Length: 471
Image 1 (tube, rainbow, N blue to C red):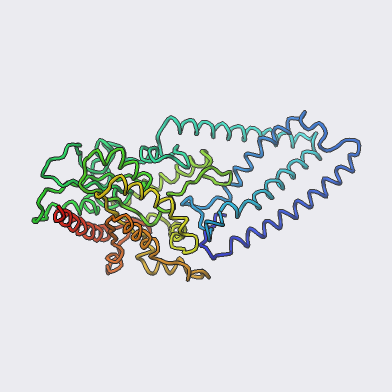
Image 2 (image 1 turned 45 degrees about the vertical axis):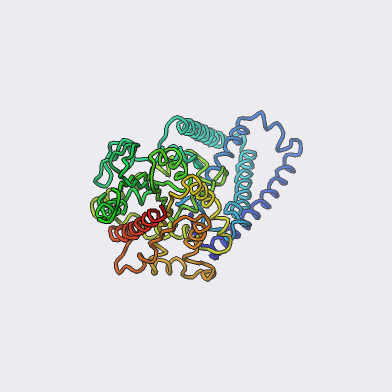
């Protein structure tokens, strides 16, 4: 049971209400059973001398296991952001499952405890207790070991649920010397040529801060950054030679861009910095997860297992993109879940709070790269593909509260406030007669990369001309 629903869908709430009712009835039944057990054993309280028995300690260790298993059951499906909250200022996805979690936890615990009371001397109950005890200890040891490994080793399988920007960059940076989409990864872990810090006087240097779109899921020469580089080099009106440095890191977002800007990009003395912003997850991933017992991402063991499978899919997707240009990367069901979770960014009530963290990071980026920064927005497929957007909202009674272009307008207004050039290929992508995204994969195909490159190249030329004129 791993439902993902949009705001306005009440199927999950009905299910939770029903399970809560069952749990409450079970608690009442257990209270009756305990009362009868107390009457049966009048000379000895059921709780008497419990701490002297091994099963009592087995029970104490079993409760964390129960919490862990319930969190796995109730955890939202990938991506790790629940799509249940209507107004994030007043509603948190974890509040939905708290009553159910508590009821089921204590119900299960009392059932276990009662069973041990009634068959305390039986060999079967002792054997079951020993097995559960051993499993719980193994799980706790695995949790501790993986957490320690995560502190010592930067690897996607070990990264914490709410890592620092530096940890995320170092974890997801490509392996130097490896090959990605037909291009050898440079010594710094970027899908690009080697670049030194020194810049020649006749060079106009552009640094790109990007995520997996910049890394690319099409052959290297068809990626929008590679295409943009070639188009700029062919500009016969340019007064200086263009140099484009690609600092793209998979899974990066505004927090990681800020770190890259401060520690790597500014050291390259760029004339222009293009900061990419993906509507699909940059707003959502900028929010701090924190630690919550009900959040599966809070457990290193669960993260390890989930990410092991995710990396397998990630490799399959990369291989598919290299061989047949893309896919499909996801099944139809999984892709709809992915896009449903991302559609939250377009839900008008409460969305301002959702944007706050990402805008905070952008404000810091704008301040650090004053007068040298340009924001390049990357739309999600549901903003371009009309049929996908209609499918995601089909049957939702609150569909009138979704604004498909709301995230883009917020970013555009924010850029105006800080006088930062805003570049958005959304209208050009919508105007295309051909598909611009890989099949069931939110990354651009070759057509989408070409359109993005055209829009960004034109914006850079205009920006440079304006700067030259002002000088």
